[in-house]
Image (cartoon, rainbow, N blue to C red; front, side, top):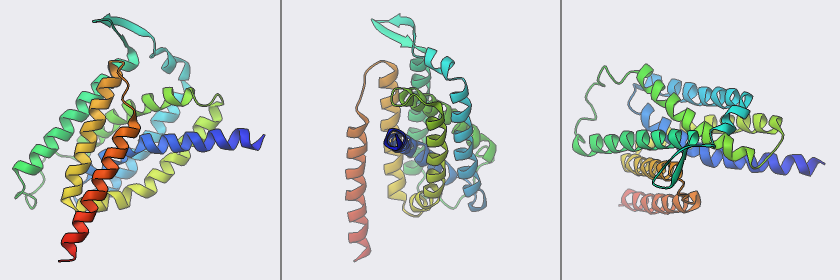
Length: 231
């Protein structure tokens, strides 16, 4: 009996953590645009709201499941409500990550320039909430296929957010300290954006391939960083 609860719970927590990595990286990249005093605040608010959004969506899970129903067809591809959300989220993620990469590569000497007024805490928090909504709907529909008990989903969401809150600080500081890893993180977000668009068009890309390739790139970059540090 205990195994019937623990195994699904641990499996769902593991899945939520894997899906939440994208969210943590996105928040960490955005928080780097704020003054140091506000970076932790954005991480806490962003992940806290992510938890509230997921808990609220679980309360209307019957409506969430209806998003999987086909609304219309384009070129023999059935587009559902979930598909439209994934397409919008993927395009938004592609735009944000590519514009950040362009800013970093074209304005690499402007690190000390005062942050523009338009890059406010409120604007960044709105961007985080929009992406939270996309990731939340995707993860909830996936979770429904794994477990049937609603309380297990609630516990998994709360535990996952606590883990992400603890991990977000070190991840954010590491990305801020090493600009090359920030570019790598942005490339990772671009790949996730492409994946969301593909899923919205019913073309499934195994996330394992993406995470493995990015993990490999991270290890190579880390080895390079250590080699340069030893000179």
